[in-house]
Image (cartoon, rainbow, N blue to C red; front, side):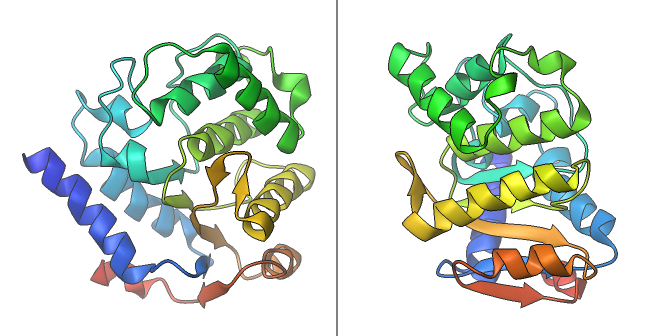
Length: 222
């Protein structure tokens, strides 16, 4: 019961402080603090038994974290369930409906998401042997595949080259411009960036409504 209350509390807080109808850019020179806050809320508060439920377990007994909240942190535990990037995304897709085994349609949808993010060259790669940047791209697309209500990226540029940041931004902008990617509706994005990343900030603001948060003291009120 306590674990369920934690889930509901975080989701309710997000709905209160990040209402739908807008997306949110957190501009800060201390994005580590932002990451630590969400890590504490999403990751540490879950017990070791339930930790994998953030991303989805084989049993598909996912908590509200996996159902409603997608999270791309600054650093990654290698929590993977498949031996290829394609299979990992297919696993994330079936998590939406608490299914057990991916079917051909799930793999085809995974192929579409891979193509949208322009990472076809990684499709058959083993997730455990990806670089840091490649892991972040997989983490992003597998979280998106679960069709969360919120997608939290605490530091968009961390671990990514400029070219890969642009890939993620292009994906986000497309999801916002048409309201979805494939059958997956666009979530409410909460994205952390440094104020010096002027070009990335400008790019994101081209599509959709963005609310700018330039102070991180709001975290103390969550």
